Length: 325
Ligand code: ADP
Image (cartoon, rainbow, N blue to C red; front, side, top):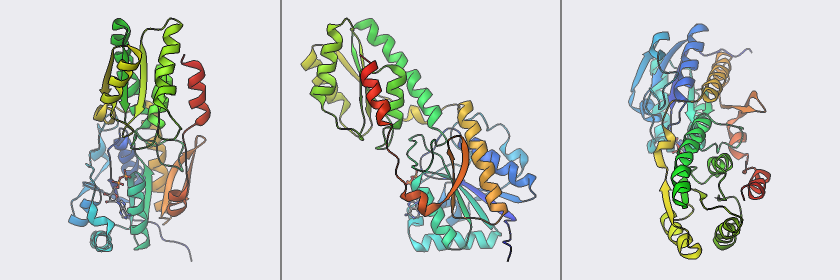
């Protein structure tokens, strides 16, 4: 029997915010309306499904958001949704409002919720939105390119002042345990050391000796890029200063990396993924994650997607060691 497609879909953003989520919301809303569906926006992640905090959307509801960071639907973590009772409340809200399809923009955790909701009978499709780029099944997630450019601009500024004072700058970069943002920022900024979770790293070998050998061939300022949660960057700065004699400062870039105008690349990615998600729901297909692989939009079963593994680009990491000397 042919599947019946969705007539009224919802869209929500969940977990950490990422620049470009708005472009994804816009694509979902406009595409769904163009296909004759009704669309609602769910506020504050899965909380909105539980509380019924939901707004009707029209084509103008998503005007003037394409170029804005953050998410017009707000985002949140919702512990209640990790329990079966929370999922059932979400399902009941959908049934009461006639929502027969949902698009969730978020990370791995949000996809688990999307899977649970699909299994409960509401076809739900996930789109990767996180600056960490730690969604294994996708080459890129919405927000990564913007965060990378923000981090690079910030480190370029630190470089100016480090260079003027012959200093070393230790920079902590976000990533939630994943090294993609730190590695790419380190490459783009010529960091003399890049410390990410995914590699074997030794402070004496990979930072102190590197600074000493680099200093011996005429360099006087240094950038050390460190992924968040790996070490206390302020203590590391003191250790570097003590062991090398180079004045060292630590900077934690923090939430600056989450905000700002999304890059063109993130807007295009969000648009492609958003449209594909609606096309799936139009066919009545849920329990999928929509991602980008080799510049092609593809979709996977959520469980299959959650089981995939993606490391950092180890070759790129080794190349950085050769080049940033
Ligand atoms: P991200 O989506 O960025 O990985 P989280 O891991 O914080 O962020 O998850 C976001 C939200 O997704 C959680 O607050 C919760 O509402 C939902 N979620 C996370 N894990 C599960 C799970 N195992 N089952 C159902 N919902 C979940």
